Length: 316
Length: 253
Image 1 (cartoon, rainbow over the protein chains, first blue to last red):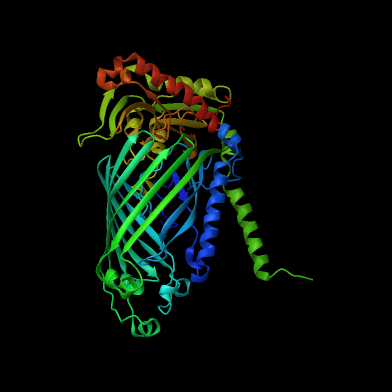
Image 2 (cartoon, rainbow over the protein chains, first blue to last red):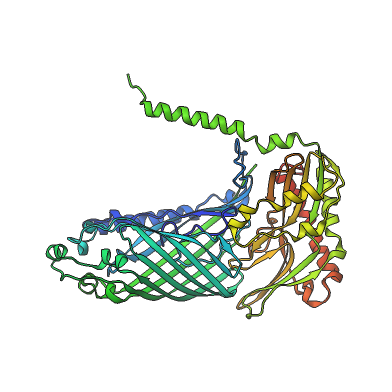
């Protein structure tokens, strides 16, 4: 999941922001220690979440004063808002193509108009805003933040050089032929670490088992251009000399295919827990890269869990 | 002695100027409302009811519409709003083309809504009489996504929500309230009626409640279903005063 993953829906009704920790600071020698620190942090955060004051459960409404002035071009902020706080953990590969994974804490913070609901979203969805919304057909801009890949953070990357942070901007289209089936496509242009084009396709069967418990699952596919693949999986002559890996000219094409599933359970109107698993197998030159064949794995699995608590805030 | 940098000083001056300018330019909502003495109320919510099947459904799940004009819900809304507002404002009866207000729909393409402006404003300015009141309160249908799905429901309706193991029925009254300045016809305040505290766990952005199958419009003419009529009326009666209070128009809490 990326940090901008949860900005979706009509702007006037919902604005969500999730802040994730950056795993770029990890170094091989410190991995075990930091991994333990992450687990401790996650454990502490979960305990803190569990120990949210019972008073908040009994009387969740906080009233704040009206803002000193309002801009006429923006929707008024007065009214009742739902604030969601939570924490999760994500166990994912150290970098794309890595065979080792690490658990990272995932703080969750979201705010939206009271009563507005989170529309279904997959863990891989980019941040997006539906500027066109026919109900079953939605489309709009989408963006994704891809963290930098620091060569000195992981021993497998020593000698490969850094890949800078990338911002991918583009658009999305999603279509619901029926309420319980979503198809989604994204096309994004990279700026920064890679300057290629990325296309994500996914489909999800969304099955409400009971009113509070929903299960969803479906296939995923990613296509990337050469400029999007090469910075992460290509090995030039200098890198080959530095790493001992053979020179490899990574070209674009089918990048990965996989499946994903998630479950969410609303314990009560305040508490919700969720979990997901995403598996993808690298394809094409991403899978053939010596970085993957010698030092990594084409099998990439991400597992995440989380719990969140919602409470209302009224702004006069 | 430490001295602040010229950049910091400049930034402070600019921020101060912007703050003062902002406060001067944009009078607060409360300030505008304080000047309002006479209001007219317009309601265009309740001529028809939709029946929607959602959740685990087949492909043929288009919404059905039923006329419930005989219930006179818009008259009820005006009556209840008048009662809630009378403590603060002098409410005057107004005449307006209800169907024209009810027919206004948002475009599914968001930028179109920004470009075309507020169609309610034009109607209030041209089709409501008498003109010259301090403010006009316009109550119209609102839309909401149902649950985590993409489909939307609007206004007054009944939703049958199917899951793998059970099904649920929910009624809703989704509306929004706008307050227009009687001279400039700008929106002073706007709010979508929030959900009631005891709403069902399937989220809607407005007043709703779970009901049993006997409330279903599918089990007969909904206009003759007294249980349904009573439940819808109850939702309006419970939500309208509190929404007006949230907008600082009525003090009922």
